[in-house]
Image (cartoon, rainbow, N blue to C red):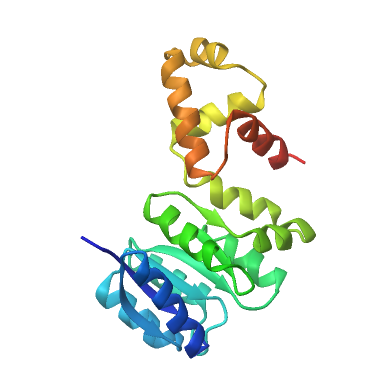
Length: 209
């Protein structure tokens, strides 16, 4: 069965282009909208598994849509689409812990990587959004959104990695096997889109810079 996805951006051509990209990745597009209220109504009605929503939709913006859907206990996973650099709004959006962030100046590959990561329960944030975070005071929200994707046990493992403990030391401390620790590290890296355990350690260090 295809994963369902809703798309709403204020630019019709952009909206249709995103729809074309995700359909080629075997997703089923349930709606293409340019206005926030209509997007909210259709997402509420169809309950797609994923929604790509423009932060700056007219009538009802992306944050307002996410807030309204959360009140409805919607299980739709959210990817915010940024069409202009507004660090204040990006910071505000991160507070609602979206599953992903794309930028209009990103590549088609970003879109493909993002929807597939979110489909698998992982997060994805484009390099351009990372740059916005690094250049402003929203970095903490970026890490919060990513950490929110982890289970409580995975968060424990990540914390111990940050203390520079190796897998055996973590296993002894948490009374689990070394293999279990290694499996958790692998799952954490997959969810955070990291390659290798060195990248995992660097992620933790970056959190506290």
